[in-house]
Length: 351
Image (cartoon, rainbow, N blue to C red; front, side, top):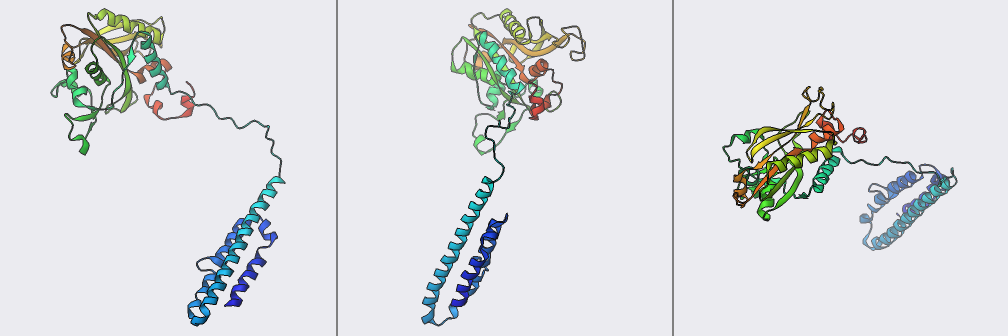
């Protein structure tokens, strides 16, 4: 046994010569020797398997010898590994010189997403008109999303918005069904519940509906606005939105208001702008009408004031809402909404 153990040391010393360590596969060779001598099925393990067969009086000496030999083998392998690292570094230092004065590899800077740019511009424009910013949760209660906005459970207007309803253990205790908000109008209710009039704020954020085609996605962005005070008129609504359109699309743009219906406003109106593609002359984008629909608006319904705890006989107000992606498509002349969500740098780099 003693001879076999000492032979291992001699064999390993003979294997770990500088020529082999200097080779390109020096590290792999050292690992190969470690497995050969100290691996689970290596020579050392095979020898140690016979210790139990020795007479009891010889086992102690054999164990001491084995520990010494193992330590010596491990020392040789550790030294060889360090020598390989040194030889590798020496080889690199003697190789081609590195010119540290050369410029580094440039990476193109990232760009703000067109939706983010558009959203920020909308909020900034209304900020100049005196509107603050209000936010609210994207996971919302049915009461805030529909009922407080004059849309009861049996209201046909609910068919206009295909809603994502949520279910789960922690949701079952909620006072009303839980859903992903279909618009940012619930923030209007939350804002009015938290403060008395006057209120002048815009509510930007993500909303969710079951839509998916070239002009719709299941998740998109809206900016809604609310102005509540004494004796607020429809003329103020028209003036505010006309000022926004001219600031956002250019001073030459014209606006028109068409009667419409929304449960939370009365009267309600759709707002069109003169086509930004053809300057109102008529083209494929505006279907030769010269006008493009951009947002909905109206005077806040008295039932909404009542739900928010306001006295509908003392205050009036107007509200409006717009899709950010639609405005971005018009501003940047994008023909497919889905390209905004593909994260293709070639597309984003254009903005």
